[in-house]
Image (cartoon, rainbow, N blue to C red; front, side):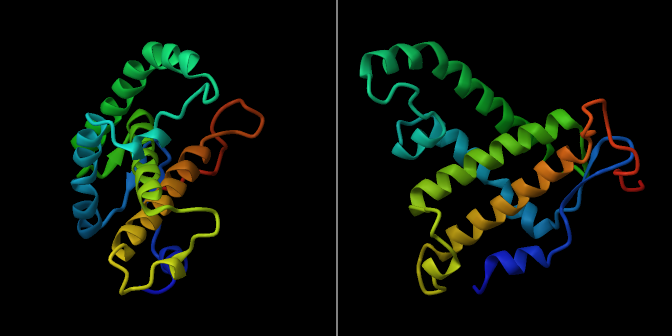
Amino acid sequence: MGDYGTELMALKPRIRRTRKGTFALNIPREERDALRSLPGQLRDLLATDDPALERLFPPAYPADPHAQADFASVTHDDLRSGKLTSIEVMERTIDADRLDEEQLLAWLGSINDLRLVFGTRLGVTEETDERSFPPEDPRAFAFALYAYLGWLEEQAVEALAAGIDPRGVGPQSGDFEAR
């Protein structure tokens, strides 16, 4: 599959902030088709006790099982509900050409959760790169999708950040592309 990072960097940006403060999605149909099934798969996974979910609900008190159980009983349902809401937004807007900030934040949450699940299942570490998954490895496609989700996540963060004035007073003038 080659150098995923280099290949992704050569692609046209998929998410950008517009002058109106919305976000244009320039995601080709093939990529949308690849993304389309992922939110539903994440929703199904959230209904299980799959170990990959630990990255989505990390323990607050790993050394104290009683405190962790108390914490989870208070927070888990709300966290899960938020994730499900983000999934619903992504599914509803998967074919949209524009998103508002709230919708893009929902996409960002779902993309991040998907990436965490892929990374956990693939055993990704800081040392992992595309050489860890040569083309003949049956996990190579999953790693390519993991890399793509990371690239898309980075673009969402950059598009959102383009609206932050370093002085903390609002959008930076001149940062929005024409449209």
